[in-house]
Length: 274
Image 1: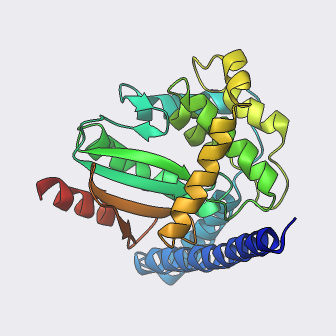
Image 2: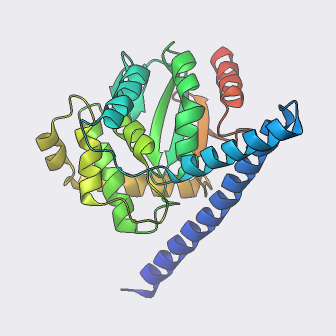
């Protein structure tokens, strides 16, 4: 390996570690903010203590996620139903969710093992999809950016698996299901069995075709292209966003909250009317 390639690998590793540290700071800040908001809504100190305790537990469990649910089980059916209801009737094409003619595009850079991405996907995103994607105002592109996943090969495997589902216009079903089933960070829960389990929960996905598509070099190349694009835009943590008029210039968007949709919806509406 040349010294240039070694330097590039070192730089990528440093960027991943910096992104991880930045994401941890954002996650802790979001958790602290949520606790403060909860406390302010309580009428009595005793009730406040109880509720804050519950919120802390929920935040912790939401950040760490759970173990993979057995396909066909009650919990898996619940996840399948929620994801199917959210996405039903909305066109998908590869990594894109929404009408191709939508006037506004939101590019969402995520790591499937990122707990803050999970929080965004399960809290703020459903409202955005229901109000602005379903109405034809917005299209969303999902892109890969490694931050939470420590092993590059695991990251590539899970993101390529999502892209392979996109070959059957099921990528968004795959990533939504993955975030619902996300496990504890750094626990090594993402195995080949886990990835196949996620795919088996996607209704209508041809698993044989999906397995074959995972081996296509073009999909691995797409993950690398996303990484380069994120670097060019100075995106270092996840979730990260670019937004703009479809077909036009995209600009970095920093929401006021990852768990509330208001700042996203305001920015999208403004662009749609411009």
